[in-house]
Image (cartoon, rainbow, N blue to C red; front, side, top):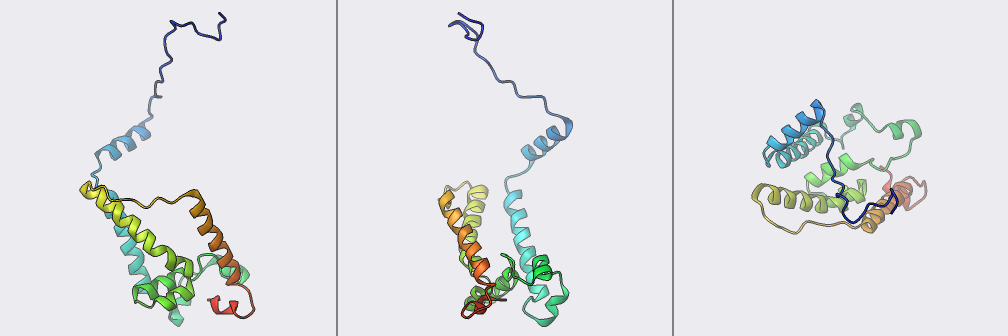
Length: 167
């Protein structure tokens, strides 16, 4: 028997986690003591903040250009993959599905899935329910990203019928 091969009666190798530094220990204690409802409520606060910003800015008006704009659009003149998202959200909030899709079709497609995923996560976390969570395969995520990429290129083409998508 060589030194590289332990014998049949050798003690098993036991993993010992490394000692935590003060910051890691503090964060671990904080996470362990945080109530379950904090995550869903904080996420809802972020969602409501985004909706409030969208309603306050009114991105479809002429004066909306005084607010921060897309750096890619300023530098290149092209719409970036996210351009039109805020306007699309504004139209969705007001129930105009056609105008929302015109400004950002991929966003309009994704909103029902994101809403379902949030509601199920919130209900499962807060009430201990076991509702079926939406599971996205790697393939479906790659298809969505490819569609988003194609949409981003097509909306910048200067010929009919693609100019309809230019926002």
